Image 1 (cartoon, protein in one colour):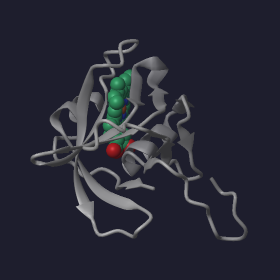
Image 2 (cartoon, protein in one colour):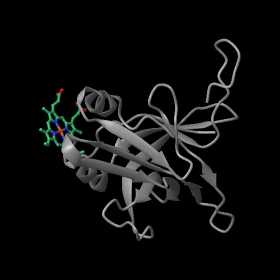
Image 3 (spheres, helix red, strand yellow):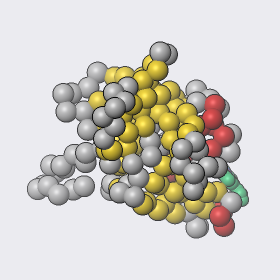
Image 4 (spheres, protein in one colour):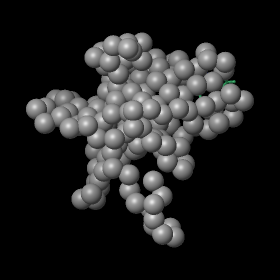
Length: 156
Ligand code: HEM
């Protein structure tokens, strides 16, 4: 990501998300806490994950991104999968959906991870604040109630 000179950082194209800072800090404190990325997902220097864009020409109300991030710890008891995030426009506003973590290898079932709230942003990027949806709460083992604020989602 940092293919720049000095402090200038070339923005990574895709959906960039830090998930939730306190969660990332918690994982960093675990003796066996770890992240792994596949299918083109990318980890920036400060634990912001970038998921590459995937064209979805037939479905303009959905912005698709690929890639898989898996976060683990506690001897495998903690195993969080965030795969193929999509921003989907619904009548009640945009939502962030991901592959149902109990679904793979079937990747067709999806859950709503977060509700998104568009922010004023520049021409080259869109930013959304994100709040946890009910199904999203389950993947964090209900440590965070629905409505908990998550990291801002940035799309470039
Ligand atoms: C052996 C099993 C586990 C143990 C012993 C454990 C222990 C703990 C402890 C002690 C904390 C408090 C940390 C702090 O406040 O600094 C915590 C927080 C948390 N745990 Fe676990 N945990 C376990 C499994 C899990 C699993 C399976 C998940 C699922 C994702 C999970 C997700 C979380 C989350 C989201 C927090 C809150 C982090 C934050 O935002 O501060 N934990 N856990």
